[in-house]
Length: 466
Image: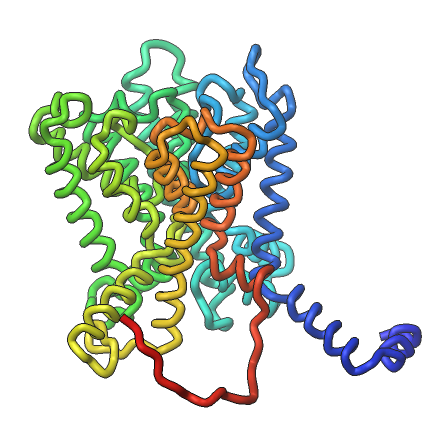
């Protein structure tokens, strides 16, 4: 510190010094850096998308539409107020790809990787920030994990891009440049659970194409598994008994949601002639599986969302809010959060002393965090749905709630409402996408609440509940 800073410090009162220290701690919170990082990339992306070079000839995009699209891409949501296929030029689509990649991997993960490339080492602070995003808390192996993560992501996207490009080229009747680009775009968008498509009707033309449907589904399923789970499966796939509790709960929850969602969607839409009813039996199962998987934050669709029955749309709401696994490219409050909350509920009904999963006791802090996330998600989605209904009185309230859940869960599915929202409605969706990507707890602890360590406890008393 300089002499002037020392003199200033001595001149401060005790209260003022404490206030400064609190402000410094708040600025140093990893959540602040992550939130501001996403905001910065969203702003830069909006500026690039607003340039004429990013738009097709004859297209006209307002600053709000550019910013909405940028936020949707960097938060890997997929909601759009314009038709991606007819609005953005090749340059604009490349900007979207960049934003999707940055948003899927995480701002701090990419920054940490470039730090490794430049200096061949990862600083402690950079390691903490990268670890926050990829779900790793041990600083020792972070450098190797970040390198391995980047290699895995790009290798997976390359394989998907080759597979999809080959299929699209086979179906093309002329030049192959666009089909190849379409394959690359969908590969990156799928792995990062973004939901953006270069086709105006999404993947509806490929509803019966098993190769495309399975390839894209594998992309967002792998991306939604979570990096900690991927790392562990890579090292210990031969010995499931050695898997950590996080991996066991994540995989079990993911499989239950995939299978259960597929069964329920098939049951609800099997006879709907505008969705599954017009397909063969095998293709109906494929479409139901694809929609079950994509609903949890991927955002692609092979059937018309506007034609789904209200009961199916209602089923989608909790699936979108739950989302993918922790520390993945997907959003939502995460499968493990809901699994812990459900297990705690059943444990309370049974009168269990502890909440256990796979013969492991869940720490009290994890229980509190899971319940807080569930309550926060219900409050945020419910409040946002109500506010959307206030500012958009001419749009069906249930569809607005669906849109709010999609934005918060970064699912990207739309009931056809988003393009028709006014300025206030679009701003609300932007805020929801942002909170959903960084997480309500990260966002809250970064800006709304300050973590405090109390050196005292209040006396305990009884309270009637239930």
